[in-house]
Length: 260
Image (cartoon, rainbow, N blue to C red; front, side, top):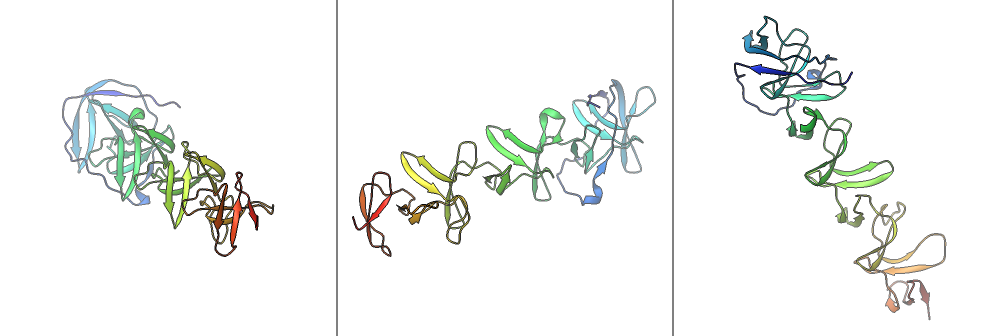
């Protein structure tokens, strides 16, 4: 069933301070609520420490997400307001109800984990890729903002501590990596800033997958070898004292020729 919104005109304000907080898994609720369309005047009522909304016609709001004075709230089937909890509605999406009962929208840090609750969709929890204010983020199936290394559909990405997708150079674990404008980690040969680099296409004892290669390197199953300086740039048209392998000439294609 597609989600429909409800507007209710409120004549009394709901008390409460909006404070983010996390609850244990037992606090999660899947309401399966059906969302109905109705406009009504009413008042907030409090009973036994819990809130409900009485409509002008003598009824009460229940079973779903309702808008009251421009703010979304969720009520259970008995009309009680949900507060300080995650709720899954009939649209299959999760929502966070603040201690005040207002459905949160935008960024929220709950229990040390960041979530993004879509302001354009009544605060539904975002999952997957999302561009926010010009920056790409990724949210896990739990809704948690991704940080660090993440493999998506076979490709590797890196997300900063802020959750922002990394592009360009990254130093991590003693190795350098490069991420394209689409965020994918590069492997193999690439020209960056007019210089040739090679990034490992497999995991090895010396270099992880995607790590920038340095030193004397044999690439692939051929007998051809190359030399990469500490900054990763490839030697071309020059003699290089490689140390262990002696002095080697590397041609315009970067291939080394011992003893030339």
